[in-house]
Length: 113
Image (cartoon, rainbow, N blue to C red; front, side, top):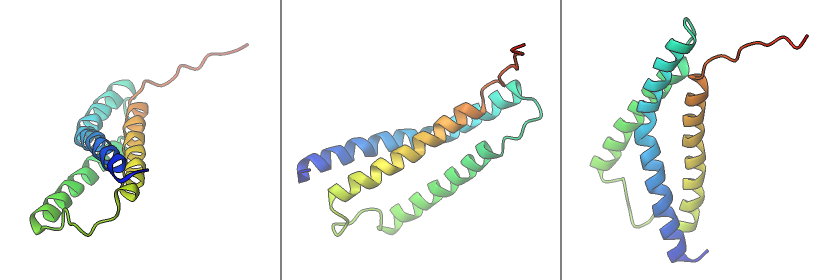
C-alpha cells in the first residue's frame, strides 16, 4: 500500500473509531436501560465497566494531549497505523455489538413437542 493511500485510509479509520468511541457511553446507558426493562434483576456489569473504562480512557487522552505526547513526527509508518486502527475498530465495534446483544429481550422457550 502506498504512503498516500495508507494516510487516507488511516484518517478514515480514525474518524470512524472516534465516532464509535464517543458513542460508547451512550450505547452503554441505553444497554443498561434496555436490560432493566427487558430482563429485570439481571446484572449490567459489562455496561457499567464500559462506562468506567471509557471515562478512564478519556482522562488518559486529555493527559496525553496536554503533555504534548499525542502526536509526534517520529511515529510508526502509516501502513502500520492502518493495521492498528483496523484492530481497534473491530474491538470497538465488537463492544457496541455486545452492548446491543446484552440489552435484547430474552428469547422465549418454545417446546418442540
